[in-house]
Every structure is written in structure tokens, then in C-alpha cells.
Image 1 (cartoon, rainbow, N blue to C red):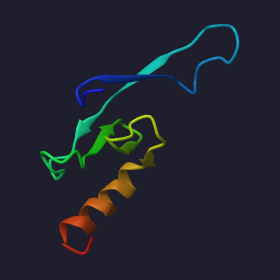
Image 2: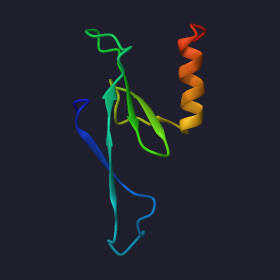
Image 3: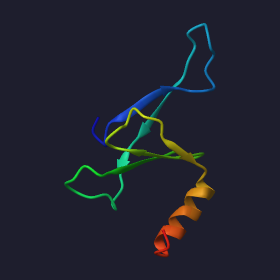
Amino acid sequence: MSTSELAWFKSSYSSSGDGDCVEVALDWRKSSHSSSGSGDCVEVALTPATIRIRDSKTPEEPHLTLSPEAWGVFVSFAADGRG
């Protein structure tokens, strides 16, 4: 899947059995800090409540989900050169 494709999944607010469901799309974007040619890429998908992070080489594998507050701490830590 390209980094600009939307990844659809069933919302946790949807009913479980009668077919009434809401699907939500994540817009995965490649990090600007990922390498350009080797395939070593980190992708992020931003939503109002969560920031999701995955390895682009294995997009079907589980991904990390952070709160906006935790993401801010991580970005500050990485920007300080300590990460």
C-alpha cells in the first residue's frame, strides 16, 4: 500500500452483529526523517484522539498507538537529540 492510500477499519463504536457499522480511514504518511531509498520507513497516521505509528515494510503488522500528549513528549525528546 502506498503511503498516500487510506487504510479502512471498522470503528469500535459500530455494532457487533447487525451490520450497522462505521468505517474509519487512516491516512498513513511517511515520516520526513525516514530514509529515501532503503525501504527503512516509519509511517504515521494522525487522528484527533491518537497518533498511530507503523513500519512501512510490514504495514499489516500491529502498530503503536499514542495519545497526542505522549506523541508530543516523544517528538520533544527526539528533537533534543537524546533519542
